[in-house]
Image 1 (cartoon, protein in one colour):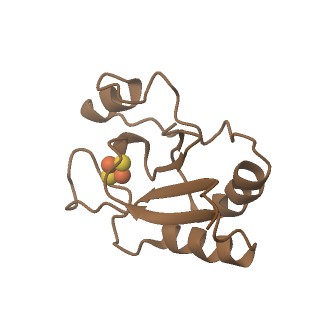
Image 2 (cartoon, rainbow, N blue to C red):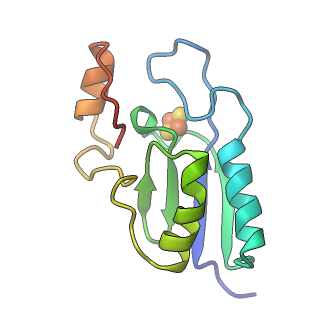
Image 3 (spheres, rainbow, N blue to C red):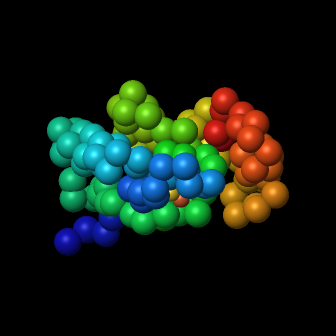
Length: 128
Ligand code: FES
């Protein structure tokens, strides 16, 4: 079997309402992962592309998040409406969607502006 070209890990982590970090799948529907999985299949991208449920990717302040490997792309603030262009532009076209890309300065940075803003109760509208 051919190796995966893209493995999409979709955070489906749930936390209790009011948790300070929030979570990527508050209603537990895994709707983002389901949409990616269905549209991967529709586009005939299987088996080289796979969308899996993942636990917390530790980028909660930027959620909903997903990671694409082996490219190492982290997207945040992802909505169902973003699914077609993630597949068409990033997976097929090889282009990074700058509006969804979590800034390098934010990845694994406990003092990034989004975390500081959330802790102060002043969350910015753009999570990436
Ligand atoms: S809950 Fe999704 S990254 Fe932490």
